[in-house]
Every structure is written in structure tokens, then in C-alpha cells.
Image 1 (cartoon, rainbow, N blue to C red):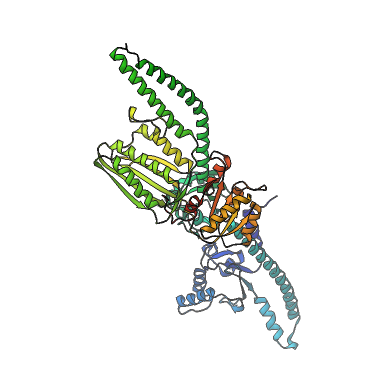
Image 2 (image 1 turned 180 degrees about the vertical axis):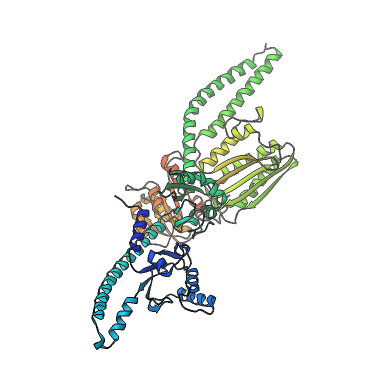
Length: 636
């Protein structure tokens, strides 16, 4: 039967209480970690001073004020001196006579992780024996001999207890060290809270999961450590765990925009164990894959219908054209023919829009200057706005190149600006804000001072063919923006502003462009001719090149050569492992670019886009340079 951590602690505490000596363990901050019952009994301490967390200073002040150290003229100075001695702790052994006449020995020893353990032994009987032994030999009596025998027996018992105590201390220290090392190695926050919601254990990973939170949280209430928003999101699940039911949930942290998955496991005393992980990148990948699958299903269903409908439109256009050429048609009929032809042509335009939505569009991210993107967008949008309408942009992005499909992002933002224009009429203001959100998202907000979204528009705004523009709108613009956003692992939200007007928030994953480098490049390509061509391109750009033909060979080179500044690998390689496997194995801090001749709708191509920038073969130096040199403008 496996023994729980609670049972282990209870058994350890019971064992320590059986030891005749008094024992206390204080941590490096002079707070009590553990003590046994003889410690409380020997110094007549109240329960508050033997509860874990009690301070060494409070304990010294209590026993000094009770006369343990005899008369003390200045209690504060005495306590301060003892605390300073404790902070500069050294191994020691001493004997002293207490105010009640009893003599004790005090032995202290430091612990590897900080703090110390102290053992207090009542040696009054031993001292009495020593006094008798120092007496004249002719004064020895049967009583002295009896005391000597008793002393020997006591010494033997003491030696056995000390051995047991040392072994217990060693096991406790080793167990604590193993537990601490294991939890610190996990890429997650692992903690325990008691029934009142206070942390009794935690590794130092909270800030890596939720930035700007403290790491040293033992003793804090979980609401204080997480903050009001995050605590409010996890509280229902935590309450379930307090009630004895395991719970699993995901939420987005408002302050950092990170997606967090948290599980709660109840313990037998009403508390709960907590495991939290940052799944932001996993969520972005999942969203992108889901959107890709939706597009595939839509394309399969629509392509057949579109083909038949296109044939019908062709027949209608042909018949109406012939009908329009008849000379004996009445005047009213000619207008009907023209109307029918216009409707059919509009149907053809709609078919083109449907094809744009459903056909595969591979994202082609390049190093993009975000500031220049905003400037170019203003130039494109300005001629489309009425004289009485103003476009105001705010750029809050750092001066750093990012990986974006500039063309599709520009089209999407322009679409949102035109929608805002149509909603405002002939006058008003459109505000475009570009900013970086917690190094996780690039966010664009398009807000206007028009009438805002209706309830129906908020619910169905991104649905294909939904429009509020009547016959002037196709209902595909916003859905195409949504499709681009989701295909890139991003998010699109519609809402109304606090002061009125519509507001659309578009977020894409923040991926800094690969740093410019002329360092050592690892080129992984199994075709000799292609490898030679790409090698020449890299060397022309000022790089040194080392080559491999398989993922396993490249992995070995990465282990032996820590100075590799960039990895350029084909997706399909000889051997069982692919370029995707190599990308997953490599250090996330090393820039990585994948290249392939696979079509954009291939499964491996789509998976590669979620791992690294992808170069379509054939490519030349102008295609390669923007991905590895952020200084090159996206327009090149």
C-alpha cells in the first residue's frame, strides 16, 4: 500500500515525539519548521510558539521574560543579540544551568538547504554523577555505585536516541531535497493549499506560468498570490476540489493574455493540490488546425455546388444574351433582360468570393516592419474615406521586425476600416491602434464613433453571407478576416465601445523576426544539388555553413556545436525523422527556417507553418533574405 504525504508527516511527527530530547528545526528566515512535544514541555511554551512559522525571536523573548536565562537588564538588547547570533549560525555544543536548577546540553547543526536543527538534552542526572565521581574515593558508597550504573545505562540510551535522531534528520533532509528538486524541474506550477486557501507548498514556477506573480508564496492566500481576476476564474473549480471533487479548467489571464490550464486534486484534509501550465502556444496551434480543418470541409461541400452553379450561370447568361438580341422584344422586356444579366454576373462575382474563402491559402510570413505596415495602410485607406471622415492611428509596437503575412494582414485591416467607414456614413472618426500584448499577441483595434453593432451583428457578424448592407454587401468580408486570423492561430472579437461605436479586435501570435546574423548556419538537405545551391546563397549573405543530410545527423551537430546561429532544414529528409522532428528537438532559442516543395494543403506543410517560417521551393536569395534579416523592408 502506498503511503500518502500526509501519512508520512504524521508518522514522522509521532516518531519525533517519542524521542526523549527536545528538538526544533528553524529555516534560514528564523521561522519554525518542526518541533517535537518535549521541546514545548521543556520550555513550557504556548501552542503559538510551537506552530510551524513561529519566529525564533518571539520564542527567545518568551523564555527570556520567564527567567530562563536568569535576570536580564535589557530584554530587547538581549533578544537582538541572540537573533544576530542565530543569523550567523555555527555548529556548536554547550551546557548551561537553567533558572530552575536543571542542567541541559544544547547541540546545534546546520542543514544543507539553510536553517538548523537543535537538540536539547536534560543532563541534570549526569552532572550529579560527575559530582559524586569527583568526591574523594573513600567517600564512595553504594549510592555512588548505583548512580554510576544508572549513568552508564542513561548514556547508552542517549547514544541510541542520538543515532535514531541523526538517521531521521538525514531521511527528512534527503526526502525534502528530492521532492523540491523534482518539482522545480517540472515546466509547471505545482502547489498545495489548505482548506483555508493558503499555500502550504509551492515550487518556484508561478511567475513562469503567470508573469508578474511572486514565486515565494508559501503562507499567502491563493487570492493574494494570483490576483482578483485569475482567482475569480479558478475559484469555482477550487471550491469543487475543496468539496472532494477533482476539477480541470482553462482560462485566459486578463493581465498577461496567456492561456492557462489548471487541475485541482482534493486531499483528505479538505485542501487541494494544484497543477498549472501555460498552454498559450498549444492553444494557438489548436485553433489554427481547427480552422484549417473547417476550411477543408467547407471546400469539399462548396466546390461541387459552385461548379454546378457556375454551369447554370453560364447557361443563363447565354440565353439572356440571345434573348436581348431579338429585335421584336417589347421595351419592358429589354429592361428585364438587362436586370437578369446583371444578377447573373453578380452571381459569378459571388462565386469568385466563395473560391477565395474556400481555396487553400498558405500563410507566407516575412520579416515585417510593423510601423511601416501601419503607414502603408494609412496611404491605402485615405483615398477611400469621405472628406468629413478621419482615420487616426496609434502605434504602440516596439521598433522590432515581426513575422507576418503582410499582404493578408493589410487586406484584413483595410476590410475592417472600410466596414467602419460604411457604418459611420459621411462623417466621423476611425481609430486604429496597433500594440504588443504581453509578448504573446500583436493586437490591432479598429474602433469607430458610429452607431455600433446590433445584437444580431455581434452574434452573427463573422458568419459567411451575413451582411447589414443589403444588396451592396456580399457578407464575406468579415468572415474572410476571421478565416485569416484563425488560420494563423489568432483571435477576432466584435464588441461595442463604452462610449458607443463599433470595435473590432484582431490578434495574431507575436513572433519576432529571426535576428540578423552572419554566424554559423546548419543546412540540412538530403539532395546534393539543392544543398549546394542553398549553400551558395547563404555564403553570399555572409554566413558560414555546416551541412547535414538527416535529422539525426543534424541533432548530433547541434549537441557538439553550441555556436550555431541558424538552422535551415528541408521538411522531407532521409531517415525516419523529418525536418519537423528536428524543429521540435532543437533549442527554442536557435532561429529555425523550414523549406519544402510540398503543396500548401499538404498535412506536413500545415504542421510546419506552426513551428517555423516556411520557404516554398524553388526560391532565390531574395526569398531567403527577408526571413533571416529583419532589417530588410517587407516591400523588398
